Image 1 (cartoon, protein in one colour):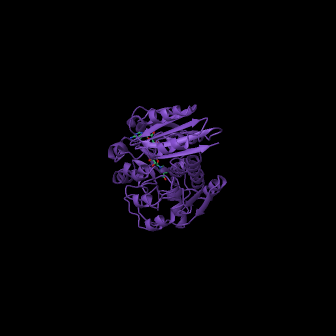
Image 2 (cartoon, rainbow, N blue to C red):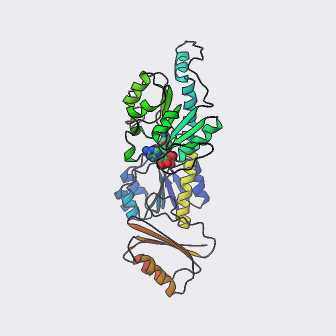
Image 3 (spheres, rainbow, N blue to C red):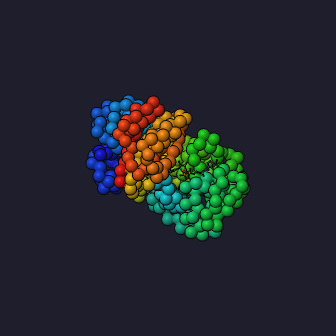
Amino acid sequence: MKALLLENIHQVAVESLEAKGYEVELLSRSLSEEELVEALPGVSLLGIRSNTNVTATVLANAPDLLAIGCFCIGTNQVDLAAASERGVAVFNAPYSNTRSVVELVIGEIIALARRLPEKIEKMHAGVWDKSAKGSHEVRGRTLGIVGYGNIGTQLSTVAEALGMRVVFFDTADRPAHGNARRMSTLDELLAVSDVVSLHIDGRPGNAGLFGHEQFSKMKPRAMFVNAARGMVVDTESLREHILSGHIAGAAMDVFPVEPKAQGDPFESPLRGLDNVILTPHVGGSTQEAQEEIGWFVAGKLAAFALHGSTALSVNLPDVNVPELRSGHRLGFLHRNVPGVLARLNEMLAEQGDNVVQQQLATRGEVGYVVTDAAAPLSEGSLERLAASENGLWVRTWSA
Ligand SMILES: NC(=O)c1ccc[n+]([C@@H]2O[C@H](COP(=O)([O-])OP(=O)(O)OC[C@H]3O[C@@H](n4cnc5c(N)ncnc54)[C@H](O)[C@@H]3O)[C@@H](O)[C@H]2O)c1
C-alpha cells in the first residue's frame, strides 16, 4: 500500500491517502523516465501533475502499479493506451477549478465595465483621472454565455446574483439555471448581449469559431471574455474590433499560442490595447482549486484501489460501485470480446454462489465487471479467471 506523489501535490492528498492506510512519499519535483522506472516497483498509486511523463516504458516497468492520478485537468502526459492495455486506471480532476474560473470571469466583467485597466495604468503612471465616463454597473446588463457546461452554468448563477440578465447558447440540450434564457442560435445571443463570455470545450470543430463575422454581430460597445480555449478566437480580428471601438473591452486568459515555460516571452496582437485584460491562463489556478484537486483525485485513487470503483476514470470503463459493506467483491478487467461475462457467471454458478449485484461496462478494447457475492470465488476459479485468454487482471475485496 505505497503511494508516490510527485510535483508538490497538495498536502490534502497526502492526508487523504494516509487516512486510508497508504504509506505516502511526496516529492516536490517530477521524475524522468529512468527515475520512474527505478522508483515504481512496490508503488501501487502514482500521483503526478503536468510535468511527469508516464510512457509505455515506465508502465512496462511498474509491476505493482494499479492507478495513476493526474492532479490536474490534462492527461496527455500519460500514455493512456499503454495504461489501458496494462489495466492501470488513470484519473484526473476535470471540474475542480470550475469556481476559480467563474470568479476570475466575474471579476473581469466588472473590471472591464468600469474600465479599470486604463484607470489602474494611469494611477501607476501618476495620473489622477477621476471620471465616470464609460464606466457602468453590471447590474441589469445582459451576459451571453456561450457553452453552458460546468463553468457556464456556475457563471450563470453567480452573474444572476449580481443582478445581470443571463442568456446562453449551447449546442447540447442544457436546462436553464435560475432565470437564464436559452438562445436557439449563437447569432441570437450575440445580438442581445452586453458581454459575451466563451465557455465551450476544445473539440476540433471549435477552432476559429469566433472571428470577424461573430465580432461584427456583437452589440456596439459590448465586451468580450475568453477563459475557455485560445484556438477558438481569431485574436487579429478581435484587435481590429477593439481598435475600431466596436468592442469596448476584452479579457483574455487563453491564447492560440501560449509560452511553454515560465518566463518565456508572450506575443499577442492584443498586447498594449486599451481596456484589455490579459492573464497567463490562470483562470483555474488558485490554492482552493489545488486543494479541491488534491481531495478529488486522492478520493478517486482510493475508491479504485480499495473498492474497485472506476468512476470518472479517463481510460477504463466506468463502473461506479460504493464501498463494500458486507460479503465479497470480485473485479475482473478483460478484453472486450463476447462471452466473457457468461463464462464468469458460469463459474459463479458452478460453485453455487449467490450474486448480490453485478455491473459491467465496456470502453473500446476493454471491459470491466464488478460482482458482489455472498461467498468469495474459490482460489481455483480465481486463478482460472486470471489466466484466461481475455483476462487483464482479477482483484478481490472482502468486507
Ligand atoms: N482558463 C482556465 O484556466 C480554464 C480552467 C478550466 C477550464 N477551462 C476551459 O473552460 C472550458 C469550459 O469548461 P467546462 O468544464 O465548463 O466544460 P464542459 O465540457 O462542462 O462544457 C462545455 C460546454 O460547451 C458546449 N459546447 C461545445 N461546443 C460548443 C459550441 N460550438 N457552441 C456552443 N456550445 C458548445 C458543450 O455542449 C458543453 O455544454 C473548456 O474549454 C476548458 O478547457 C479553462
